[in-house]
Image (cartoon, one colour):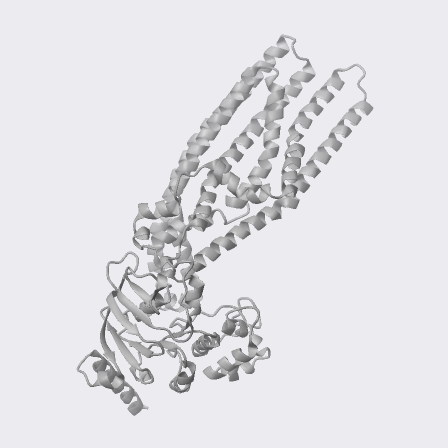
Length: 615
């Protein structure tokens, strides 16, 4: 995937949102699971009929009761019987519609959650570097907008269409009843629907045009709020009195968000006045027609009262139907965004290739350059080197030299700005993601522990765990003694966010856990260790180094460390400086040269000697 797509706004939008968003194709696609479910289709029809006749029942009972009151034969028993029949019919239709709606509510929720799982899975396989592209993240948030709740977006779409069936039946029945008095009423109601839809469609398009701004401001407000409440940052915020700085950053974003809301709200207020006028005009037309008909003797008093009550319900029903249609139109735009994100190719890796054979592999970088999104500075600049199969290679350099970035490129998590990376002469862009990741055992500099058990963390899975291999990996890293002291042993949960009896390991223990996870993984062909012992004390680090010969047997290995004294076990050392390999060779060869490596090693040696003298 070409990174330029994400940097250019128009190209990014054309890629993520191809084609014009049309209502009917979106509706047809979204309703595929509904169309395939006879039970849900029957529920839709049943709800539409049972709910749709409720307004007409109210109108008819008015006609019956007024007619009975006007009759000389009227008596309480007849009145109560008529009211009872109406109450029973209303109860049956109302109960049936409520049952059909409530019993199928959770099914639509399940559909939304299924889409949410699918889009989360999509994001977990996309290029990792895209998470650092703020413009892309602002845009991709539109894919989540339709999945955020029960009453809007995709699920709200399902519920509203389900409910609109009943409203449509009500509109048709009341329209037929009133249109018999005058076609003018039907024409006026159609005008109300058209004007109402036009006004709401304008608002829908206006809000959607500014949706990216809403998303951008909303994402920044959430991030600022999260950081302000972050326990880990709490000490710094208080000690250095950073609350004022947070406020300065927060206020411009908040003000920009409020300006957008005020603009949208102002437009809504203006158009709502227009809608109210059209509804009032419909009431006036209906009333004039009915009064003329009554004065002309064309309708009875009972019919007049019935039709007058129908007029009131008619305006309310048309307003509700117009709102439902505008909601469906609005949410279809965001649902289509969700579909677009699901269909977009967000991984630069192919779906077909793999590295054949077994055993250690050769790694080759050819003129690889890389810069982070929004920056012109090249972290790596035409970088070329090769690690031979089975070779143990150390990568060293100053902080910020690009060592960790190089690892992410090798793993296929980031994509080069230019140049190619090969594993056994196979371009990694052509390798299926699962096949590429299966080649590596990796330990990263940043340790992130999730709320799983120790066994699940080491095995990186929930079932089929080889406990014996997990325990052996923990023993190799020196963590088994601590784990075996827990009541649940290897099945002890980590952290306390999910389980009250979870344990919180120290930084060094977490790093040992991550090393154990890398060792557990079988059949890996290359081991990548990015500062794997940074959080360990000297004794623990030395114990793990003593195991490295056995650990790395039969694998190519890339070892990154800022402690140059820890690279002696490697066959070759690469010194990264200024985005290039400035020096390479064995420790002895590099120490024999005048260069940065000898300077760094000597400087570090003096530091350690001074520390020992002080001790």
